[in-house]
Length: 140
Image (cartoon, rainbow, N blue to C red; front, side, top):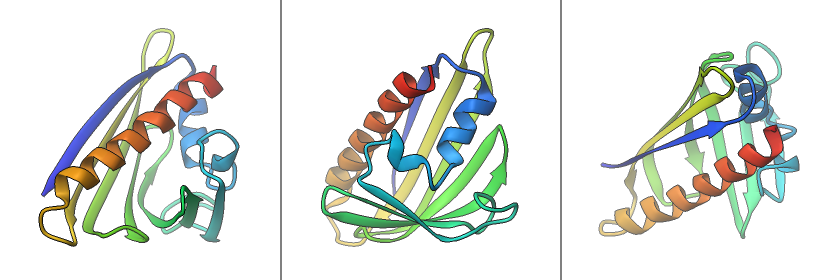
């Protein structure tokens, strides 16, 4: 199993941070993705439990499904297609700070091809570090 955790301080209230992260249709505006398509609305509509989005960029089309939704604190998701991984679990927690929010992003997965885990972990981590850096600039 491959795993990593990222933590960022975002200078915005938790509601704004969570809304930006969970807004499937608006994600492409700030995240660095070329396109994001909401394939299936969730409960509550449109971004909640069961929502499925396809994130396109850098030659990839990654399908993600929301597996839990507790605004503005926590959302979990899984990557169901588009990467050579299996058993993916992603968790985003947003915690209020005095004048900001803390985002804690945890990811774990198994590589589909043996021996590729460290490279895939590095690539996923770098991609999410970029997302958090853009979120920090955009949310403020």
